[in-house]
Length: 157
Length: 297
Image 1 (cartoon, each protein chain N blue to C red):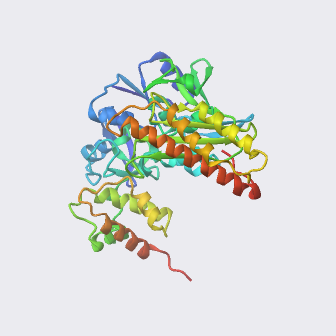
Image 2: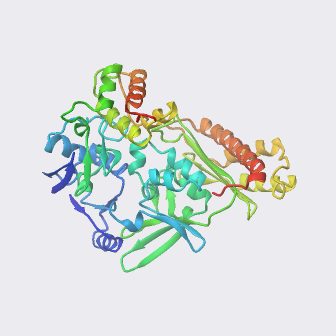
Image 3: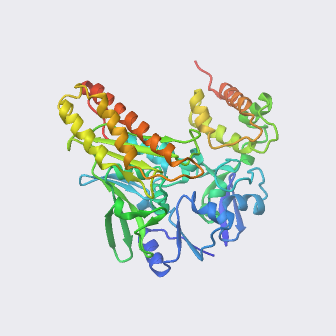
């Protein structure tokens, strides 16, 4: 079936199997492999994307449910100027090991900081609770989020 | 596989009447797992995600109506005054799951571990079902939930939502599992104090074929408060022995099994501990609320 969605600001069309997930559509039809395919049951968060501004697991969205909707993926974060500050912070803090969970964590962290520029420790942990890092690099990931929060914080006074 | 995409509830009900085998999808957090793994290949799927009629809640004629399409994220954001329901919703999955998962999905899936089902049971909620032609029916939660993953819904019906009489008084939801996120409850418990009716209501999840109520524990708590004079004077102390007994009766009302997530014996123990804690919290809330006004449920 034909699905049309606004992906990273651009209207795209894909002809997918009706039972396909949004994740499958992004990766296999639209050439956007940033969102990773792992558990396919919403446990790991490595396929996190924004659907109409809310962070969701793309593996749990039927592609048809994204029809005429807005999707933003990790590929939409960097621009001509360079990486998004959250991506920069992940690099600098050494929050990337094998890298598989990184796109999902970057999306979850970016969403958190957009909603809450000054998250406390508990808020960071809750926001990232749906993303698993099998390398167990959580300490550096938390460092990266704190670093990004510091950098992105609007100047005061 | 065919995807049906109704734009209104009336259209959805008509489609469901023509294609009773069509499987509803809303947030997809249950159904997509089965599609992705290949365990399920329905001939048709009906997408309820665009039905504004289901994506609302509000107070109507002395009832609280909760549309089946309300996501847990929205319940947390918009329904904080219903503390047990908001707490249960916050305990569901992860932020990604709460963005998509709906209360209607919990009802339709009817897992004994469905986090929203405990509060609905403790609220004595009614489930609203509809079929085409404007025909609706309501049934008490315990008539709707008939067994593990079994409900009384007819093939041509859709779940519209739930409704209950709001109560005044403290309440809580608590849940035990190996982490604070992404956990299917080993056991969960919801307590609601109804100040007007001078009643205590207690439900438990993951410890029986459906979410359960504990009527003997409820009666004991209500009479313990009455004997202590605590219904009239929230500062009046309720004996610790009554709180202990409340926990024991909660455990006795549970009917758990051994499975991968926990043993029956452990689950019974959890029921007693959570029940005692929940009652102690409620009594403390009532004592502090004596000065500042008790919050609603």
